[in-house]
Image (tube, rainbow, N blue to C red; front, side, top):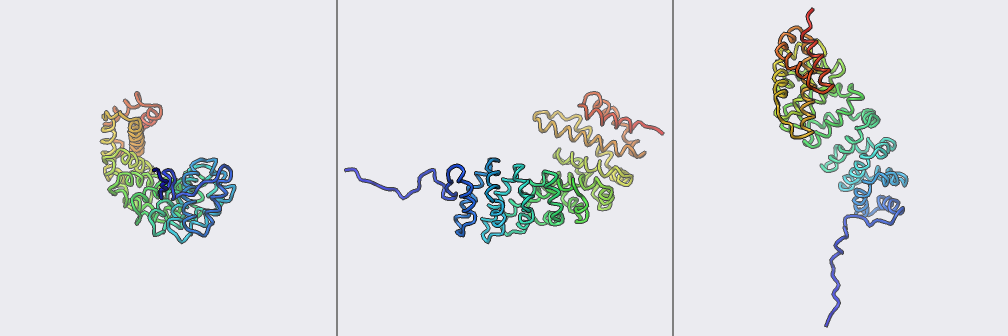
Length: 354
């Protein structure tokens, strides 16, 4: 005879770590109320649900209308590490949308997020850096980070944080130095970037070289670059195994060598010979299997030719560059519009005689 058996297991499609969503327009107001609940599990489940819901930009807009930004701001200082981590993740997801980035600036959330840079939970620190890095992609966001005086703190984090966070910090500083490099110079960022040029991870080497290029655009940055002896390390990176690193190293040398002092120091450290070797190696490279790789190799050549042009303005550099004129002429005849322009300029500078 058949009997009734009731299982104690939950239905297969129920996720107990996420809050149950209300229907339609009631969903976000309910989640906002749950964020303010005194029960820890309720707050955690609401945050987990929001991490899914807010990938839709329409939901981000609706969430802001119900006052969720203020609720999340309060949760950034919650006593529970998981709540702080997930609250920052929600803000990171919001920051991937324009309306979310604007809200972070409007509600002054940069400072509360940056307070988690020192959190004892690595997940919370990582997510806070992701959120700040995402905000820095816009001019207003980068300016907001600069106005919050976070540059010095970010530079200090490059000395102690994990490699993954270091990459995010280098990206954040890259965008911030486009609007203001003075704070980075004052925080001795150039010295820290130089120390990272020998890092074992190619992503960090490349991003450190890129940031040296950014910080060297002002005259004070060029002078400091020569003073801290980053040119010898950059010259070595011109022979790096990774083409991204080679490109950024050439760009950094190009920026530093605009000044006479930078040109002379680069020539003394063997930059001319290294750039010639780099130009010839990229010219003979037959790696053309991937669109991204092709574009990167073109960027290596573009920055290499620009750096050669800078050094060719010095008489001692010009004499050594004569041998690459045929290569540059070939690039001027066969390269793309931008490559043709810079190659013709390089040939003109190298062949100039007083």
